[in-house]
Length: 170
Image (cartoon, rainbow, N blue to C red; front, side):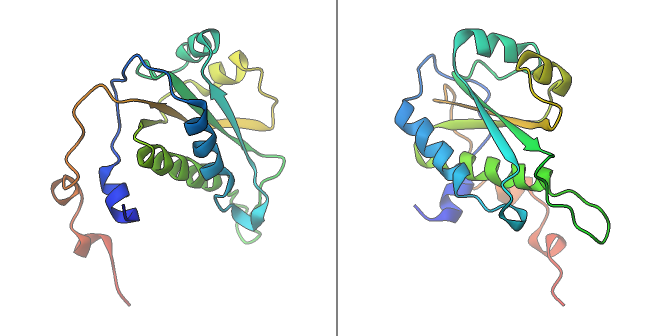
């Protein structure tokens, strides 16, 4: 499957089957994160793989993970961030986003569904998982086998702004 076909196939899953995700698939998803580029290759991202019942319950205090059997908390490590010298912009959110996107696409390739979750209580995640001050939860990636009909791969034609509005050529 081409990258474009894979990207079109991925959608936000909000209903998961009561089925565990194989450890081999989780390892491949983590490997996809591991090879993702980061600013100045500082790799200021840490991942917390949540799959044990008590940990899923703790995460449930902060976010709706749609009963996914696995969730990955993607954290920015501010102690390792590359900061753009001209305006002081930290690249940690961008780095975390790139890792998340790699993981989503790998999960899709493996026949799994995902949901990128940004609507969560970061302070609760930090408290429940005893995160040090320099780690900030950026997003949560819910992962599992979808228990719903997949979205139409051609839905983007109707759901996105026209390409002419998206792009300017100079």
